[in-house]
Image 1 (spheres, one colour):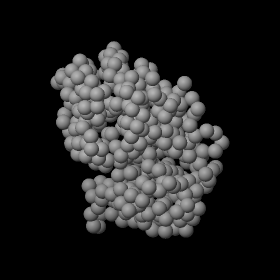
Image 2 (spheres, helix red, strand yellow; image 1 turned 135 degrees about the vertical axis):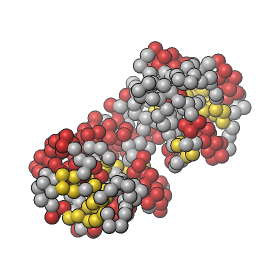
Image 3 (cartoon, one colour; image 1 turned 180 degrees about the vertical axis):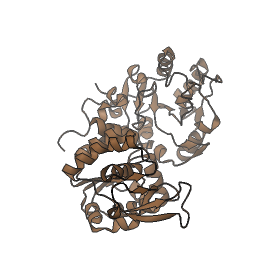
Length: 430
């Protein structure tokens, strides 16, 4: 490596004295939807940090966000049970065979939880005495101060700090500077958790890859990924685009009219088109699936189109997937097979109807046995697990495969050129 994988100024939890001390642990257990756990992976990968806290004699108090209970227009917070931490608590109690206390604070119908009041004191004492194994606080976004810009934010972070002796951040995927990820780290001795350290180390492998470096990027919007895409383009040897990002690029490059692609996005994509004319890094997918409707994959209403047959000004319906034949092209197989680092943040088709392209892509990537494979993004991991469960499970224990717990945080780090530029990480530096 050209430089240390971890900044020597990053405060590591391994160096913290935790014996008999209450440890506030910020995790990203944002895996609950409608009171059900979709995939426990984000919970399971925090066990290393939890075990380390207990081994060092610490008493853990956990906090995570779940979903988006706050209405952006009104600012009202809806603390509905579908976004409760109870399913996480139940899962952890079964996995760890410990007793976990979830505390219930008074809830204002519009403003959520206003304060961490003194009713929490008794459970904290029970935690210190070992009568319970862990406290799990309510959804962090149920608290009025978590995402606030007003004085209630400082009040909330102060109340959080009063619960514990030190703070550990293990939620790299929660990259926005909120009270429980940023402000709290200024009020308590604060450290990076084991998972957060692993995320930073693997981002380093994206930013300083072993070559040839292939990235596969897709998304439902082009404008939100321009910055990360342009930054990543400079680092890769080859780039494969999918979804709306690919459609936008093709529309801009070949002057096509593709359903759902705006003129504004085509103008934005033109910068990448001109760049690729010079660098020639984008590996184009020659065969695409055109559909008359977004409603599903109906017989007679979808077809394969060949990019080579398109003329400037041609109009196309919705391009919703890549044809499997595209991945059988020698030019594509050669690039994938020869790559030494592969970064994947991509679902290639409109799920669940148009899944063949994504499944075939994941299988092709898995056939490369020697490359370091780095997967990022909740949708990416969800479809890898759903479409290729064997590959997904094998990757969990494979030293040459890493699953990032988030997608947005990784793309921001790529755009900014460093994981340490993210505020919740930056605040952990001496």
